[in-house]
Length: 538
Image (cartoon, rainbow, N blue to C red; front, side, top):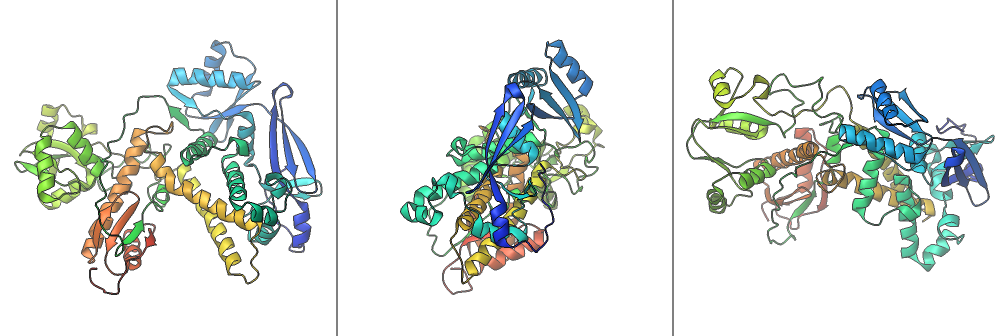
């Protein structure tokens, strides 16, 4: 059996293809036989395929293979193999219980643990298959169908139907008419089962749990280890949303762009691309420096305060440092959105965000400490390498998050084209395939919008303080640019957070387009337009 698609002759008509379609409906692991059974079904047929299988995990090849083998043998484990596969190591064992024990051993030694999936799920990830994937039977062999391929999309919309599995054989149109909510929920479960490579009955209800399982899947297939080190929480100002009427405001949705910024078209964010050894910045002008970088500066004035472009830095500074009352009073006096940073006095040295350092240099409030300041190094016990606390992204290796962003974007683009063309058709049918496509699109969008927020939540097992700081700093730097751009173009931002900005001014669509073009960023979505006809402030 092969898992890749084929180029087909256009002579196949839709009816012929639909008769040859089957869906992956069941996966079962038999440890005593070292075997996986996969069931492919349609309304008219059921096929069972057997695969020889041993439980496995991917391990990053930064670990020394020979030392790892010795470690496992020293603890008395037998019946395993450790082989190089591409850039990773693959550890296979005779039993799933041994695999879990060895991974726990690795975690104890390294304080980092490989992601372990149950055998059925790891088999599907290895094959790049999932529940309810569509396969075409040709000459006795099964080939996975790429549903982003235009050649298959009409057949998918009209002929794809899992009602025999989801609605106990009742035709979709009848089941939908009888109980629309129940059928919709069943389709949602099937979609998430496909995305997460899980049977329907194991799909959790909460979106947070689904996102966690999605991260588990992509961390597994990319051989990423999770750390057990104590991770401090990132300081986030809880903030507040002022009371105001939203009738005359445009609501601009920024949550739609954050995951896009993970791609190597922008910041190439990922645990595998952060602070690499090959691309460390040579100067502070290097284009791969992240806005989470802290720059050591000397303050040139007494009793100096400044409003940071990073609310998280401001809140952290305010929480940790003395003179809280002074900052509270300053915030009230000047109606600041966040606590000011300070006070500093002439000659003080401090670490501040790189964007703040650049702004303050323009106003001659600070100067950047350099490696030439030998007296400062002696007095403060600096090392030349530790003048600044820089963070950067790799310019050579694409992060696995970047690859995932591009994959989801590709699928979303195909689904949007598919749904739009179907809705515009005079003969549009509300088929199972149509509803499945819409729910799949909405589910993938929920992943796209929520992963950046999920990775800054310390309750996730994939939380990393370093990565969270990078994500939050990118969000804050982008919003700071938007606030400045809006002000310079005659708009007033009433309130902004990581998800939305509420803007007064004419044509917020023009604002978002011109902002995205100027800063070479994805365009935020408009979820509501300002009312009124005036071109001036409303």
